Image (cartoon, rainbow, N blue to C red; front, side):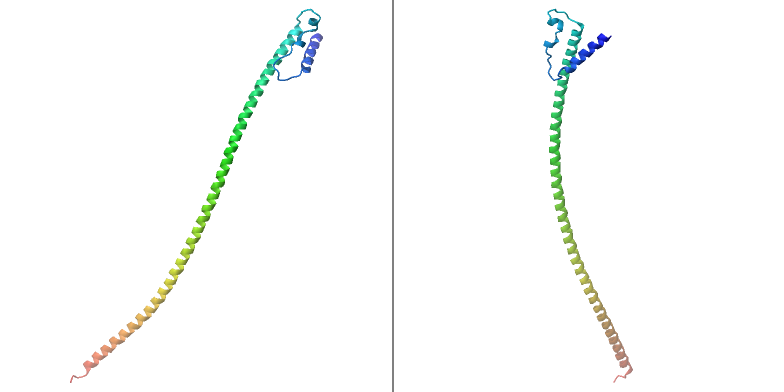
Length: 173
């Protein structure tokens, strides 16, 4: 069991010492065992496990490389979408500013028109009040004049009646 632990330690330490990069090829120079270097072509279990681990590591590096490419593509797509949205936002902000200016201009024009209309209505009301006062004064004068005419007519009727009555009272000659 201690032998298996030492193998695991040797394998893990050899993996840790390897530089993890995005390269998809694994050098085969250091795969050979010390026995192969001495000239005997003996394949050991440790060598098979090491090759299997290196192969798995190579597959993981390929997968990592593909995922990095996918991430880069997604970043590019999102950056493009962000730029498009920023352009739309800028266009919308510009349209809002134009509409705000137009609204302010129309509001000022309407306020000026309303002010002019109020002034015109005030002048017309003053004219109407002036005419009403003149009419009331004329009406008062006409009533006084009508009263004096009525009195004159009454006086005239009374004098006619007295004249008629005096004529009737006097004998005819």
